[in-house]
Image 1 (cartoon, rainbow, N blue to C red):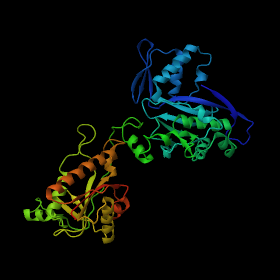
Image 2: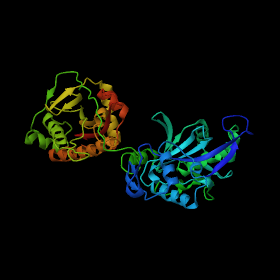
Image 3: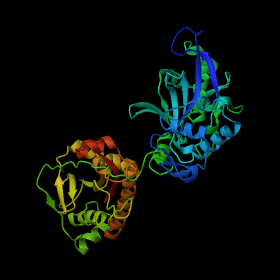
Length: 457
């Protein structure tokens, strides 16, 4: 509830005082409902939260918090100690719905806000991070991006999303790229009051975006607690962010909604090539079993058929298979399929030639060989892609994660099919998305390659 006096932040005259306020609001989708007997219930994105029977002052504060950031001292001015204790209890119950903002003057609006993205989010205002001589820096997991017309800072380790409303917050954040102190930042940003720099730093630290740094006597370097945590050593920012944003718990967005997407028309550069419905004769398969390089049309057809025959269901019951999954085939060595790049049409069991350049074909095969750690290229390479507009029809926020699950299942089915045919199987650990987009003739953003599988060779 603290209110601080310091020079105005938007003027070069530091002798003009301003008030720095700690404000609170409720998330926009939170409703406060009165019940029987004076009870109050909050309807939130996490479910209904019973708040008991708070007094008139706390009720009025909750009402105002649904309208925007509020200084509780203004509402509870002259209120009894019991009202303030009741407010703390109510705010604890509403932790995952309370937005904590830093304001400069009542008419200026917030400088920054910490919005919860998890049910049990608790904002831990960190005055220790604001000590003038305390080394501090941005967390290595924090990232800045534009979101809904706002500049935000997010971290997979944090239960909050920080919104940078005004320039002072952005400028302080820019100083936190390396280890620094409030004193050093205030000197560099000499038109900002040091107390405002300190408060912004404390809010960023309270939301988990800024971290304190301690001197490590062994290495002689400054290290934050996150640098010493063995649980975080194996995580990169990208992997941990993908994990938290594609699962429930720390997402903040409403998962489970369906969105429509437009489907791109399939391409082709020549007449389709029909594939046999049978894998081939016993003689063909015995040749393959000895490691012979070519993969026949019958064997290729069996691989593709086995990969696509099983339903891959995601999401709620009845949501059906993941839409937008496509298979492309790069043929390097086959006795009855010309060398080239094709799109597989499962409904007709045909290969549609795409007219890829020889150089792109070879680069795609070489990249797969290197990624698989193989001595020579495979006879055929199957590339799995996903059409992004179709991913939007799956669970919002988890479509790409679902596609990766399906991709792994398809690769396993391909491996089993190759083993039954006596073919050498190869699953590259990764693929070059730029080479794949060029060789397959796909956009690279509208349709993305997500996995590969090789056979023969």
